[in-house]
Image 1: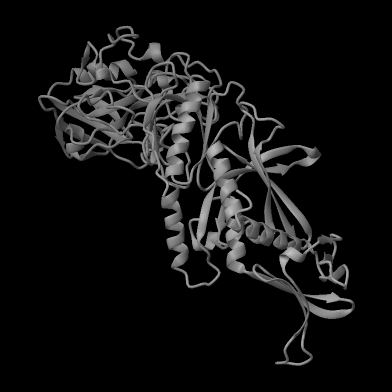
Image 2 (image 1 turned 135 degrees about the horizontal axis):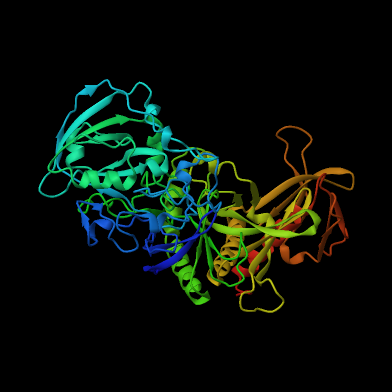
Length: 592
């Protein structure tokens, strides 16, 4: 029984997104690969910057003295030269636009290319009481200036029938209001609550919600306030805070922050976290958020290199999902690191194979259909396919070997229905391995490892070339193919078919033990057949075919060479004869 080794590994890698690379922390365990967005500035990290621990931060609200900002101009040094697509409906990430007045206190939405370090300025307090409803409508915010093309102008009238409410919140000794805010006149937005931290004052009030516009704080009107004015008003509000708010439904979707890693599509599994909050938000120094991460189960993943995208520097690793629909591309610092990571991940995927085979055979064994066979081996390969113009490329496929068949799938067949519908099925008995090794004439570092098969079908010979990722993969598939063919020969024992010999109908039977038998069928039902010729394998002097319908056999007898008309392509029989002979020779110990 094979003893599997497993690898545990962790380190910083780069993850390819649709528009750029971001740095992630990769943690490899026995069954999973976890990718967590890295928070270091300048590396495209998606985690938030916690300002609550910085000098000059009080109750989670910055006073503008944290590193990188000027007093009274909170966040602007981070947010200048950024494309804030959170406020754009027609803009695209990375368009190079500059919004100098944009001073969000939370990370931008739908702006993966901004490259800035997002963070929230929030005010934190204890609890509040449900506020009563007041009918006075909020004033329009459209007076903040002319709206630029492609930007969204959010006004206080956007709330439709929502009423203005007054909410009283009491701060605790620590914790603050427990909210984060964004917006301001310079952003053509009201002052909006972008996050409410569980268990803190605003949450206890049960009267505030994300998307509420803060119209006033303790009577201090914020309808035309800038972001910094709102921050100062919240800081100076004291222990008892009365907020006049109005819910604006249209802006609440803007507060869902992008989960660059957690929302990666993978095998149809829902993202583990609905939004990005890489570390504790700035409005709550003691509240720990959910990191932006993706936990990938390694079971039946396909790890490859230089398959779907060029890898001239030999630094890339490709991890394909079991359903064949998604690919994660990771970049290492150099080729040695890439080789180390590839080997570790490949080792853990291979170690999960016995568990996969047990699950498959259990699933197939629960069916009462007699067509099910024990699965001996399964895994991902890359099959060479021909494109227009004579070019070739490799396509990922799942190959399964059962007791009798070779099956090919586009994705992992986890269900009986999927298992019963392979893209291709060939009998092992009619298939032979014709090549295994380096794709080049002589082995070389980095040369492709391939094996080729040929199958005899009624339409002729069908060939396939498969690429393996490692020498272990290649040797395993080579051994399983050869042993599978020989086991199928011993299991099936014989094949029989109707044919014509010298203008009379006969039946040719090829038996693993007894050799060749040609018999004439009886004239009526129940009548026995008459054996015309019977020869063991060792008597066969020559065999051949015309590739169309005739099989030629010569046993050195007085009848000479026999021409059997099989009424269809002769290749399946030719390949079966070869498999029987190969299995017998191997059983006799004449071949290693």
